[in-house]
Image (cartoon, rainbow, N blue to C red):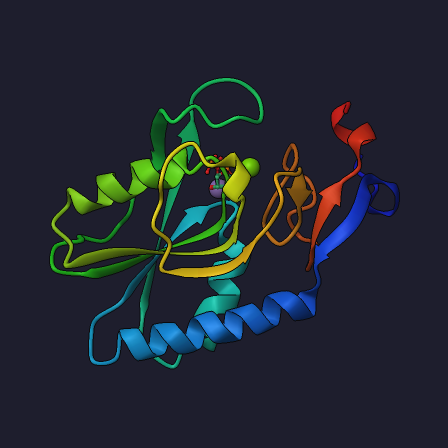
Length: 182
Ligand code: PRP
Ligand code: MN
Ligand code: MG
């Protein structure tokens, strides 16, 4: 059983910080996609909060779809080898696709996903991500809409989990080392 009271170390982004960034991201997306079709693709499960909150701020009409992917390999690290657990229901041909993610850590998941989706004949593929860890990057990923850069620490909340816990926190916090045996 996780205990939010003792498991968290410090809050990196408050609910208010997140809300402000979402407002800015949504305004840019509305502007950039004016007059164009837009399909938001959320990456389960981490992206659920960003998807819900960002999409509600858009005035632009959108459709929404979801993918579930899993990195092979052990533990908490992405291996870069990605398996599709749930594919999109939508045909991407001619669509403007905006991938919605909670975090870019190593970048391996998104770099694989972008090339996978580009191979399906879309008009465009871009990325919106709430968080990025520049110091953890193992590959270059071009993010068009970014919330915040954060330090390379173990963070949870706002969709991000540790062993499936803490996703429902409305803020982003660092995890206390005792939780992950640090
Ligand atoms: C997390 C996060 C991103 C990905 C980022 O997902 O939600 O999707 O890792 O890591 P990367 O940049 O190093 O590839 P995870 O695979 O933990 O699945 P989840 O969204 O279900 O938690
Ligand atoms: Mn994820
Ligand atoms: Mg996870």
